Length: 264
Length: 219
Image (cartoon, rainbow over all chains, first blue to last red; front, side, top):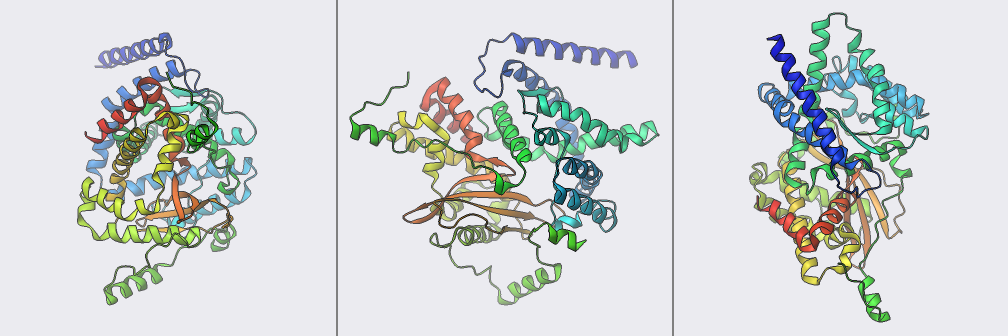
């Protein structure tokens, strides 16, 4: 039994290496300057996608099937509530003191009135969650995003956010669930956390599947945009995307007597 | 606690009591939120709130929406969304520099294919709209005299679920305000499609992009 388990793990590991190397070897020219490692990233993405379709997604769907929605919401809220302390700490590190105070307030309010975080009473009273993590902190401190990076299992990330995730793991997991001494209980809670996170994304992945022209770049562009906005913080302080508008180009060229360049 | 919440400057939502009272009133008078039809000449926040209220009341009253009947959702979008949207601009900005190479026929086909894609994208979300769903426009901090503004809103879906942040970008036209871009949880729609559009056009041309969109629409 144990041997079979090891063998399958070993096979998975070998496949992952092969996929990553295969991705590296592909000659696809990167099209986005934010994603110079596109070939390798696409390899890891394909590997994650296989793993997700084979294991994680079915498990999350099973969980959604057997657990009533209010119970799922409650469990998800409890996990999010535990994470508030780390979010608040990061808001403080970023000098976003209002966010830090509001997040601590949320934690106290939801832990008591919201029955251990099960009910998000703070959101109902007009204080929505302010997600924060160490990757954002690094960004606020001036560390650039770096190349886009798809991590095995975790998925979309970047060099900066990947480094941030190592600190997040220590700050958010080892200091909370990680403190539980009972190993089976601790590991079960971590496993459940993973399933709960995946379940929350089921509708998103369905949408991406059915509407994205290229799910890989859809996820990449969304991820980079969202992280950038989170680093900048206050939405009113953010510059709006400046799209080039080619509405009148043709007319202008005609009036000026210039022949528009032809695409190959 | 409430002091802390007010400090943040967030708009407080109505108390449970006033919600119940409103619902009771609605039942007594047997009317759906009798909001006036959206007027594009109104200030942007008023206009966006009116568009959302009208759309929500239509969606809530229609049982076909809950069954994700895409053709019915299409009709509703056509009647209650498209008049207030400059979708040609949405498509044009998504296509970027490739737009100038497209013929008028290709442009029309691309606009239609993209519109169908987005209707399908949001059909799932729209089918989850129930009586607990509402959209509150947040305090407008932009300049109402500008030609290009952003209206922020918070969508509440049920009681124990995180509200979703949705921002609308509008431009001033001679006919009044028109929405042309949408931001859901920090992701702008046009920005998120630009990369994919240009990738597909570079690979297989504008017709290839139209075909790729339509292929997914017909699945």
